Amino acid sequence: MTRQGIDYIINGMKKVKSGRRVYICHTYYHAYIATVKELVGRQQIGGSADIILSTMSNNFESLEGRLVRSGVFDNVYMFDEKEDVTSEEVMKYHQDRGNIILNLLQRIKYTKMLGKLQEDYIPTDISKYDDVYVFCDSDPIGYYLNYKKIYYHAVEDGLNSGRLDDQARNANKGAWPLKKAMAKLGLIFIESGYSKYCLDYEVNDISANHSVPDNVVEIPRKELDSRLTEEDHKILVDIFLENPDRVLAQLLGTESDNKNKKPNAMILTEPLCELDVREKLFGDIIKEYEKDHRIIIKPHPRDLLDYEKAFPDVVVIKDRFPMEVLGDIKGFEVDKMISVITQMDNTYYAKEIVYLGLDFLDKYEDPSIHRKTELLDR
Image 1 (cartoon, rainbow, N blue to C red):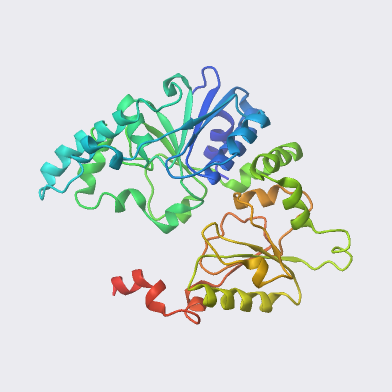
Image 2 (image 1 turned 180 degrees about the vertical axis):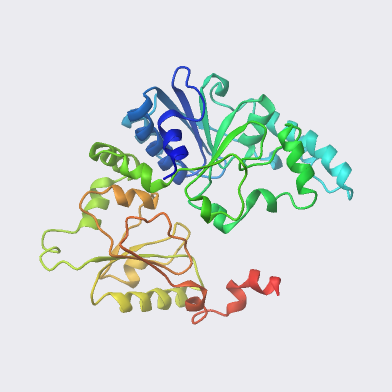
């Protein structure tokens, strides 16, 4: 880990006044990383924090109550963040005028209007915090912070998400240098480190990103994890597993299961192919590994295949939780983590990652269905 990264964890990127922090999250993964950062941060610099959960694109179900009970955060706020499409007034300034100058002039207005749209829904005064951490600042909250001139720390949306998509540049094709300069003046908003009010852009691994802004800061998730205490791991399990007793019983197995214990192989499913083809695909994966492993299936939230019915002899974990929390469970080990196309950088607790890829999927489905991007690039 870089010296800069260590200093960032311990001291923050600016002088702390009263140690008040807030984390603004849009997904379970965001909330998990925010909690880890806070557990580590309070060990080093003290202070306290609040957390804001945006419901714009995610249903957090009972997470709010579990976060409150944990005591990690002083306050847990729900935020009814508003997309631009909810306002005709905002959308008036989100049309192609056929001219770069006209488009940029209306974008200045759009930036202000989308930020202002959030004002009645912000659940607490964000300006009162010494440090504001925002996951996925491309969402309207980034425009709000730009509108209110509030400085903040941006945190990458997903682990190594820059490897998959250079989001800021892709969203601002054409006149990139001009747009970047306008963002630095606060006239328009560009996410992921390019906003005038973005102090720094935090990523897990700089080398995994295609290109990065000058204010990028590398803080490896493994480094954060290494600073967690045994009690911290327990807190994370209690927060992010809605039914920890049931899930732990499934993952760890019974005493009789463990007499001739095989190493665990966890298969992450995806809503691939038609249901009958999908059943055959994952059935073949199970056959490949079941002789030497205890098979655990973690269905994708949008996967409607009934894996318990299709494969009654394997363990099926239906509960919704960020995969990282599996690394917090004492006594649980994963020998192989297997997926077809799901990225698994976040499963650093697994001994081996088995990524089957599109070549494997080609055997079950017409490649033209799942290789659309490649075909377009030809």
